[in-house]
Image (cartoon, rainbow, N blue to C red; front, side, top):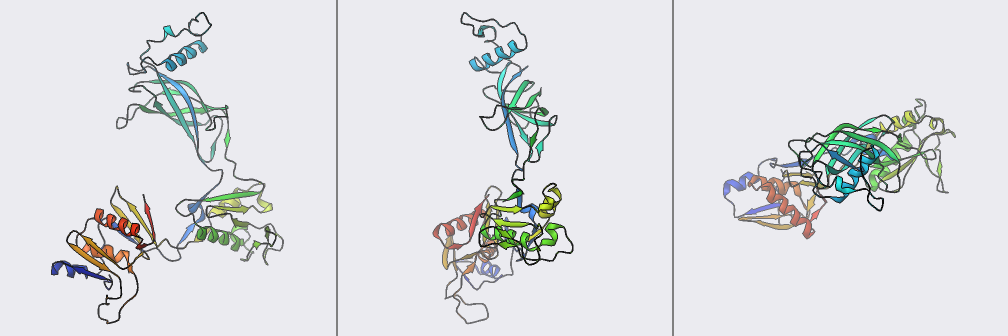
Length: 393
């Protein structure tokens, strides 16, 4: 560890010597040493738009509870009376023709619940089975309950299509709240939900939030446009640039020869549009699989600090710097950076900033807890003396 930027005061000699030892790993703190040319699969950086999970939802009734259902809930009574009427049950009507709720007002073993099911990003076919989550609205417990047949609608309130029907015996996790239950395979798809990923011969790549920035988006555009042999599947094709024409559209590079080659354009720091080659538009699966298997070389996130306070974990990039500061912590005084600090074995004054990872090592040598390191990092960032991005998880 380089200690040329640090001066420690009011410390026992033993502790100060410890601060001059080689680099030590702070407990709960990791120093990132990512390669400057780290390569990742494109499929690990992004997803194809249209490949999103969707939530189906509906209101249902759970019966068979042990007196833990809704108490004197008028909506539950109306829903139960209506369900019984649809099943041919003997429910009377009042003078106005409305259902007589007196017959079901004392039901204590019934609860109104919210029922949801997740449709995977690849979609779902008619007849597929999905797991169901059931949450009570006012019941005390759903243990021992049975979900009556419940229609599940789409996430949009203006879409009244019944995509699935849910029913079955509830299972309550003994380690979770008794007001939440599941029905494994409890929803049967009644309609097919397709994952539409292509629009007018184009697909859109959506970067993961952890990688979304202008630099990464541009690197992905260049990677797709520069490696024609990989994207088109033509082993005889040589790498050539496919760039934008002056009119704003796309034009093939010198090796394109007018063939239908892949062309990409970064829309913003989150989205990259890719035109599917004409020969692959009828069956784009092969093209997309090759595309997502392309390796992209990213710029390392070496100027980022990631903090997980709940687990006491700090990951510090190797290029995160701090301004010349004086940090006081209980009986510690640590001066970092500035022209008055001399490298060990030299006499040259230094006008450069200190590294945050070196400060972390110095604090580790003095047995400073990780919680205190996190507090120091927060204070440095709030003061504007930490040159890098701080991300909290």
